[in-house]
Structures are given as C-alpha cells and as structure tokens.
Image (tube, rainbow, N blue to C red; front, side):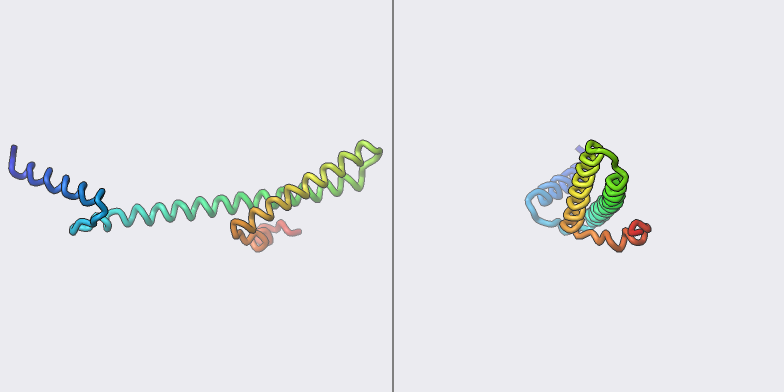
Length: 121
C-alpha cells in the first residue's frame, strides 16, 4: 500500500473514532459542522414562521365564518334554518376559540399581524 494512502486512511479513521467518542479533533470538525447547525436553525425558524402565518390565516377564516354564521342567523326563516344557524354559530365560535388558544400556546402575536392584513375590519 502507498504510504500517502495509508496515512490518509489512518487520519480518517482517527477523526471517525474521535467524532463518535465525543472528543473533538484538533483540526476542528466542529467548525465544518457549524454552518449545518446554523442552516438547521434557519430552517426551523422558517418552519415556525410559516406555521404562524398559516395559523393567522386560519384565525382570519374562522372569524369570517363566525361573522357569516351570525348573519345567517339574522336572516333565518323557520325553525330548521334557525336551528342550523345556531349550530353553525356554535361550531364557528368553538373553532375560533380553539385557534386563538393555539396561537397563545405558540406565542404568536396574531392581533398585530391580523391588523396588518386588514382582517380586523
């Protein structure tokens, strides 16, 4: 075997052994993985941002459905339509409350984002 090939293989095996034993090699494999960790953090932040935007969109939709259910109740004629309108109001209200609780858990500041999107009017 060529001496350079043998030395390269020995260096790779040493780095591999040190990486899996928890020791950091002197060459700094940690520096080569730092961009990966930063990228993973950016990907996670982007995913959370998208989830927050989707949640805000769902809150807007649930609020719109709740308002529409109230309008439907105001114009309902007959017992069947009134019963249906009451059911629709209760269902829309529960969904709206659920989404608001979820936004609170995720610490999403939905009100400021909602007002930016003119959803408050």
